[in-house]
Image (cartoon, rainbow, N blue to C red; front, side):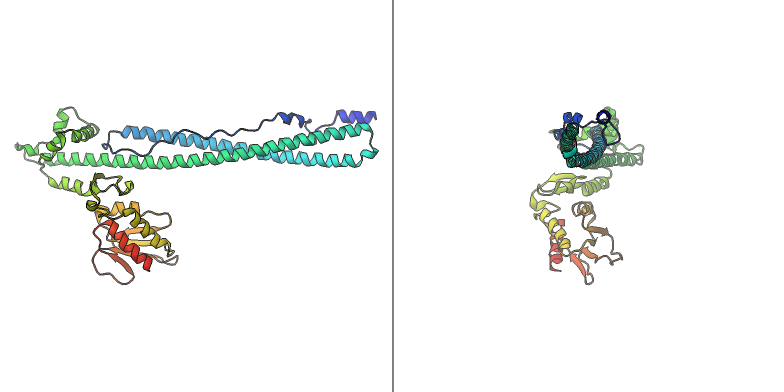
Length: 386
């Protein structure tokens, strides 16, 4: 009997030779799920402003979102480590519960021949087993919460990454507009340098020199002035009355950078252009039609037939960038080419589309529409009839 008592005082937890720790786990508190972040993501929709006025703001916004993305990645890694720790702890608890269950079953089978002290030990083991099962339930609950938090954090990280891409796109557009402004100013300066030294015609006085005389030295300050000058009551009247020594510069800008569009045109179609709002009938992209529906029907014509590759030739230069932007689809690969090219068709057919009036060979879908919307409607009808 004394030997049994001595053995009882030296009894330790069967897992890893550590002292019994079952009762202490009753105080373990479940991990509480952090409430979803209420922080509103930075807005990526911006009003049309001058090319360089908010360039520094774009840089600050881009840096802020990048920092937010890095912090979310760190939080995401920490959540994964916490979840792995809970999984290991749960596995350890399961082993402990199983060992205690085997020990209890053995003791219960011998209880008719055991003295009262052994029955007390069985009761203690049973209490420890119950405590371990409770701790295991709490750990499973904590693991479930961690998984939900990890899912929410991953979704927030994805959203932040999308916002970062959008801000980067807007920043690239702003930089492009600033480069174009610099090119126009440089073209005026080069033309002035090539003029005769003694020429005094006022039409050959450089606007850049006049702006610099007033203290507007940098392209950024000059762009700010021009933007606000046009909103002034006298601005438009003064501008249209100015002459130019090289009209080709203005013609190029007006042709490539200005879009006459209606309010129904998708915003991404005019991201890098100067949009002038007109009626639907005067819209250069839709011609009074529904451009969004035409674009969707065009893509459906590929998808319903199981086609995922196509070549488009003859798209006018002034709408080429718009067509590439609007027709981008994750399941359809379109190539905009100057002429049709040979491609490997072992993975599926390549649909060849021509925009123009020239005669084409059989198997090529053709439209001679005068705007993008009508072109997409013509091709969509031919795709659905194929």
